[in-house]
Image (cartoon, rainbow, N blue to C red; front, side):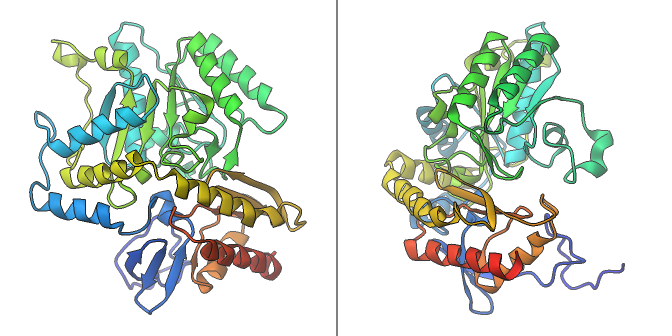
Amino acid sequence: MTPTKKSPIWHPFTQHALHGEMTEVVRGDGAYLYTADGRRIIDAISSWWVVTHGHCHPLIVSAIQKQAEKLNQIIFAGHTHEPAEEVAALLLNLAPCGLDYVFFSDSGSTSVEVALKMALGYWHNIGQPRTRIVVMQHSYHGDTVGTMSVGARGVFNAAYQPLLFDVSSVPFPESGHEQATLDSLEAACRNENPAAFIVEPLILGAGGMRMYPACVLKEMKRICEASNVLFIADEVMTGWGRTGTLFACEQAGVSPDIACYSKGLTGGSLPLAVTLCRADIFDAHYSKDRTRTFFHSSSYTANPVACAAAKANLDLWQNRPYASLASVVAMQEQEIEPFRGDARFKNVRQIGTITALDLKVPDGGYLAGIGPQLQAFFSGRNLLLRPLGNTIYVMPPYCVTAADLHEVYAAINEAADALG
């Protein structure tokens, strides 16, 4: 099939042979996006889970403007700057206890790549080389080669299989079958001497918004500790209030050995990511022997403007905006409740500010034919919702109103009648 060329842009996760013209957005404000053709769209998924306090939050915008006038970029090897130092200090104050060092990068995928390299470098440098990584079924950690390797194998990465390294996998802790997951993790830690276990705490995002209880997360950390296996928490999506607490690990009382944060780190304004680690992981790379250097960077590591945005966002969290967070949780509870007994849906669920429900259709899963139809239906009602196949989820910015959410769920109800 020969494409009809219009824009030269190749968009992410987009099959251009099936997708019409892209929606041109000209402005964002709070929970809303405004298009070139004059529409106002409710951003019900926080523009791919990144926007926390709302689009173009004035404090974050002001911080970006001020920093851009002073220092907009500097090589971070051999140099530092105030915004990065402030962000690192605030992160360590907010993050779970036991995390001591902050490594900057540019995206969720790169923060996970950094975590994997930290883990393997740690074992290599202390003279106990371990190379095996344990992962969870249905997980998603990014689209770079390393992150695809530790994510679920399937449609996302089938074409790239020859590049991926082998991992050990434990089953997702389905309700009533949690012990199977724990037994599998314990066996992998005991028998395979892995370097690390990586997991999305409490909810697997792109894997279908699959949720599991904090007690399972706590027990997985205990198992890793007992076997001296590094525990990596991928909080790229789960961080910044999404699960109802600042970080998902808080709900299990878990302090990861390595933690990955991105998406909401700058409030959704600019790309930035961090990987936090324990002191002994840093110390294993600290040496007069230059071969033990942690060899990872990108040109824009700790970009000053992005760090200024993150500092403004962290200042907002320092002021504890948990009243608005609790309000979103309560509004989501109220709106999702009528769907729990709805025969058109199954597995209606919520954790914190996130809700999800699966429309009953013959072909489920990410490539379910209903997915694009649902997305088009919602777009026609000026809603930004991007279902994962037949899984519809709502993950709004924290400035969303009750009226906004009522409009979102009314459309979900209509879509089930029209398309289910």
